[in-house]
Image 1 (cartoon, rainbow, N blue to C red):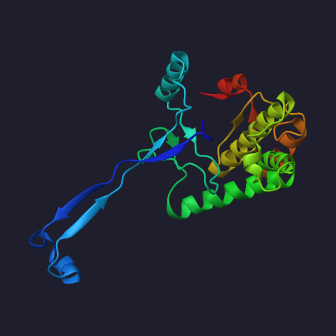
Image 2: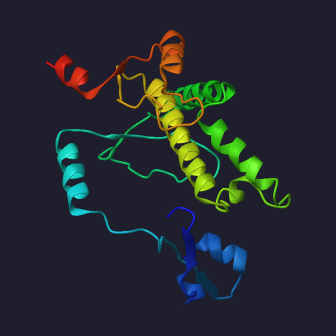
Length: 221
C-alpha cells in the first residue's frame, strides 16, 4: 500500500488581484501592476488501500474508548509524518527539548538494535543482497522484486523484524512501564529482537520489562 502511494496535483487555478486592493507593502514591490496568483493543490492517494474489515474498526474504536493511543514510530528520513495535533490518536512525544530528547533516545536504541544485526539492519541487508542482481537498483527498491515465494517470505519477515525493533525503540524513548507482547521471534529465520537472548539484553541495557497480555491485565489496579 505504501509503495503505491502517489502525489497527484490538481489543475492549477489563477486569480488576479487588482493593484488597488493590494496591501501597501506589496504595492511597493510590484509597482502599479496587478498581481496574478497561481494556486496548486496536491493530494495524496493510495489506490492500493483496502477498506478495513468491520471487526477491525470495532476493535479500534473499543481500544480508543479505553484510552489506548498509538506510539509514534522512530522518525526516519522519508517516513510519513504523523499529524495528530490534539493527541487524540497518538501518544505525544512532547515538544521542544522534550521532543528532541525523545528523538535522540529513539535513534540511540534503534541504532543499538541495528548494530546487533536486528531490526532495520535485517531489511537493509536483505535489500542489498537482492540489489546485487541489479547493481543500478537502490536496495530499498530491490525489496519489491522477490525472485520466488521463499524470497518474498524473507522480505515479509525482514519488515516484521524492522517493525519489532522500532516498536521497542519507541517504547524506550517514551519511557513506558511495560512492553506487552507474546512474540518471541519464532517466525524469524534469523535472530529476532524479541527472542529470549535479545529480550535479556534489552532488559539489562534499557530496563525493558516484557509482559504478556495476561500479566499486564493482572498488574492493573
